[in-house]
Image 1 (cartoon, one colour):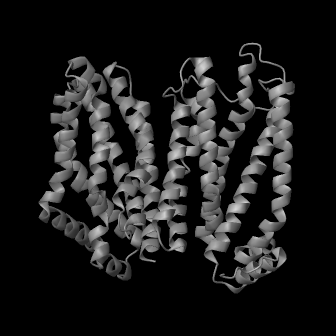
Image 2: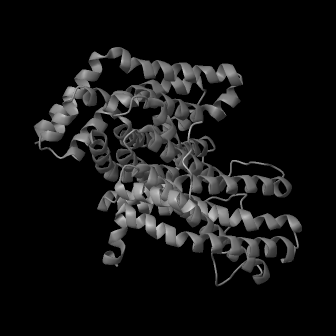
Length: 257
Length: 222
């Protein structure tokens, strides 16, 4: 496995891997998001208690799960970077951070929109809501620390340490509904043996979960490519790449009149 | 070996006590912030009793952030941190010494001041005992985790605001458990579980933070 994985520590091969993955990730993301969202919003049966307003679950739950998942992925990338000194690991960590922050924001926003009709309040200081808000702040902290440094290699390491410190929050979010007696309901889909959701409601949710994951991966890959290009702008392979792109598009150099 | 560590701690304590203004400023800040609340929210004894423990903890966290930079800043600026790294002593042990000094300098005065704060905010005796235990167990966490962030930002020009942004979210769980312990004490309920969780957080931080700090310092030194 290491022999297979090792070449991607080099920025050039990581860039090429991103290029070959990109169409698949975008295609899969758009397809499953379209199927899952249309199925969930239009064809899944209405909830017997909440009526049609439960349908926001198809956005809320995938984004909430993946806000934590992205953070864990970020922490793993940081650990790999710190232990094996991979520059690409730090780059992918930073590529993931704003995407994860966006997912956390979507989860909080849709949660507020769902909470208003169901609980009668946009926001309550409930354990799960609070810990998800902390997660958003942790993403902001990692991003702020990264931009504070001029030397991006140093910045990656520093932000990586911060990401690893914050990872303790993830189990707190996950178990908050069990440890505290909260207003937020318990887990719905993670207990597969006794699911508390009907299968015709569950399927679109799972498809959307896949769609969100692919979407995050696709955006991350694009951001990683940009990060690599920005950092390696003086390397010959980047300049060759830029030159060949220009030739493909047959861009006429502009002449001053 | 032990003499060396004692030497580091003694040197840092001496340096801290020579700059009395830097030592006193966070304490004065704490006192002023705590005074603001009765004036802003209203001096009703019941209100104060309810918000008291939270106010003291929030003020403690905010005032500790003011002096936090001092942990490595001067040593980093005059190069003595680099000398310590070259001295052959393990860096994580030096970091632990510095954290211990920071706790002694910033939080023992706070603990001594705490009866006065409890009086200001109308806490009962059982609430004060619970508050004292949470402060004793919880404030080392502030020094331990804070040292990681200070180690990371020490080479930066404007690190202090960033420090607050990085650290406050991490201190939230501490604040939640501490105030919930004091609340339980106010209602004559057992507060052992919350204390146990704070103690667990403290021990985990104590075990891992010195290593993280030494890595952070190496990153900062580049």
